[in-house]
Image (cartoon, rainbow, N blue to C red):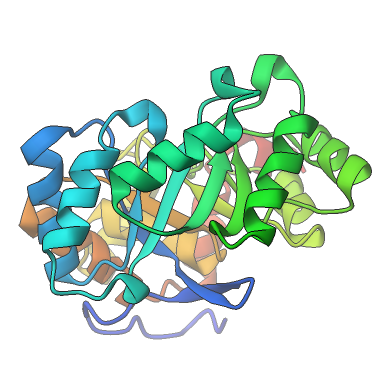
Length: 273
């Protein structure tokens, strides 16, 4: 990108997408943790009305039924909503039952993405991965992936099955940026997804504040736009409509190459490369 590029005007148009087994996965998604019950249902309905088309939940969040109520109530067709859920590793050996319960709670015949929430006992979870692949073959899920996995465990899944996860969802932000890890995911064809792009970020950091000032945007916008520049999917969480709109509009912010390099440098891993 040209270092003198002019940022795009603020806009809340369709979020950029990545191809996932022929299905377009929005790179800006709505996260539902820790909301439950009516709050979760109303938040998802609001998010869909604002323009979000990816909704992220998990068995462990205990809000799949609330998300399902929103999917049933919204006027947005199911085919237009990308639904992600996750299986906790304590359900190893009960993968199919867990998925069937998730589908029933969500009121869906399939989910677009099913993730192993974190490595079971620190191991790759090959047996579970085989069940995930079987569910994909049967059409119960469109794509399968993992969350919180290091490279070596992803390689172990591939070594046993010949299939890499489509997605690896991890905590990822400027403070977590590791170009070596990001490149390892890219080489394997694994889409990197940030489940907490703002949690580990110092939103008062002078570098971020200066970039935000020059672009006349918030620091949150800068962090989200930085992730999108690197083709990292982001899951953002807020029950407030105004904040939802602001987060979605971050896709309209084009950072300069200089800005991106400055944000990259906030990570010790990036600086050590």
